[in-house]
Length: 135
Image 1: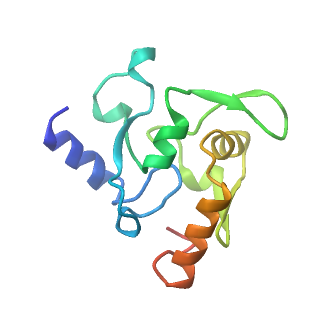
Image 2: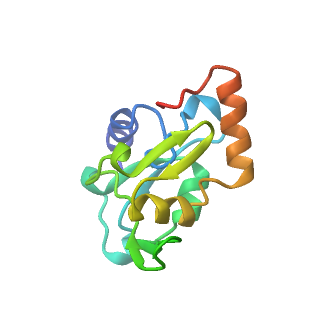
């Protein structure tokens, strides 16, 4: 993947993880260009299949396309930042990320977005004014 594609993905994301919305400026670990549909599932390196993701979201997502909704116990697709609107599926309650839909709940679960360490980091950033609930 060329550097101009990487830069376009980063710019499109506004410098934040397209899954958990953590700003790159708030962490020292570089964000990654993530394949929404993994290469092993025939995902390609085109802009329509690439997302900007923090290391934790990318590692937890891996090649997954779906997971089990913790509420309904049904197989549910994960959030696709190229095809879905973040605010339709997620909302903030302080440092806690809430899934508004099966897609949101499943994505939060599979990507471990509400792991205690992640909540603590978001709370610290909120307390310091470096993160807003609208981020």
